Amino acid sequence: MVVACTTQFVVVLDVSVVHVALPSIRVALGFGTAGLQWVVTGYMLAFGGALLLGGRLADLYGTRRVLMCGLTVFVGAALVAGLAWRPEVLVLARAVQGVGAAALSPVSLTLLTRELPGEQQRARALAVWGGVAAAAGAAGVFVGGLVTEFLDWRWTMLLNVPVGVALYPMARLAVPRRPASGLRRSPDVVGALSVTAALGLCVYGALSTDMVPLSAGGILLCAALLWEGKGAKDPLLPLTVLRSRPVAGANTAMFLTASATFSMWYFLSLYLQNERNFSPLATGMAFLPQYLAVVGGAQLAPGLIRAYGLRRVLLVGSAMQCVGFIWLAGADGHASFLSHILLPGFLITFALGISSTPLTLAATGGIRAADAGLASGLVNTARHLGGAVGVAALAAIANRSGALAPVFRIDAALLAVTAALALALPTSPVRTARAPSTTERDSGTERTNRSDPA
Image 1 (cartoon, rainbow, N blue to C red):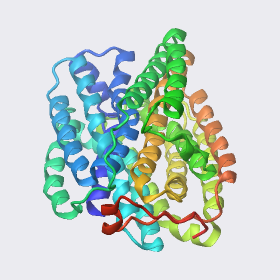
Image 2: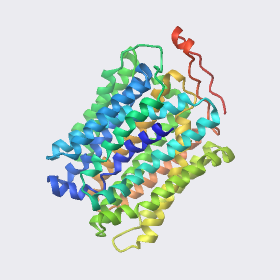
Image 3: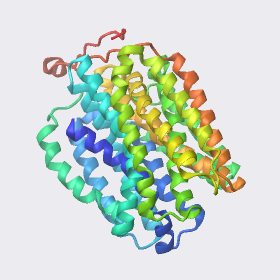
Image 4: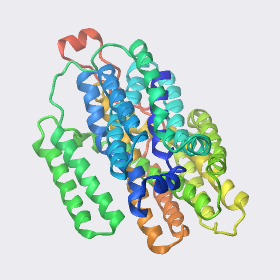
């Protein structure tokens, strides 16, 4: 639990920890306005694009081995990013760091879904993990404000180095030394590269409002899906997984929720500093209530799911977020910080904490033990690609309109769709097939359980 949750906290924290530091980074390295977004988007895009490959590698080669390799790449790239001397170096290092994070994040979730035997124990663990993932986004802005104010923007990246070094011996002690599957197949590198390239073109097209890369990205994404369905011998994403209504619905809802919330943290951090003249410390402190709200909502989620069911909890949580974004859209340069920024932000993040657990349970339920890494990679892919696409697309809208109100109204619409998708999810979590025994692994056979209400 400690290794899984700390790993997830660090990799999600790195999405938003640089938000408050962006004005300082722009001055120090000479970024342009459009290029500055790639400090955030480059990490998220590489992270989200490689997550499915990271999850499948964990299935094929074992969680411990992939965790160690991911830590090495993540920490090394964080060191280079912290010492970056040019904009191109920082963006490239952040992208490589995202690749390392893509190996870490699915492993952290796979550890919980595979190693915890009891349904109630696993549900509680997933609630903690989901709360940690949601809270890390808000905590990143708070930590980034403190570090930028009292140290330097470079420490928003360099802080990963001691944390990663500390995680390495912990992981060697805590993570079981065994492969997750007795199978030895080749990872679908073609699928991973084509999906990542397609999404990169789509995000670049959204940022530049250029239809050429956007169209090329769409065509390449269709070709990648065709490859996964027909051409790949061992596909990175077996399309049969998406035939499960709970899995498809939960991942789509995760994508939309992340698009709204990650873009909110990005725009609010810049708005408070550029429009309201908040210092980095004051900006970080402004996000502290949101961090506490996410943690509080995540703690309530398991009890609410037991009492009212997974579907109702997600429906209410998404509706609360929708109301919060409509409220937030009313803020302008003269609006009260308390009534138009602090309170709606608190409502949105409290509801996010409540919603994260049912989304994670639905997205990972009913999956065979041999595909636990795939399911973990898929839900994390939905989260981080949603954040990358949301920041990119909504930044283009904000640049064109010159205001944030349209952005927050779009966020509200995304959460309204999420509330509708909640109706496609089961009332109760479904059981995940148990992990195969050592004997079953050795014989190359795996026994799976049918998905039924827990």
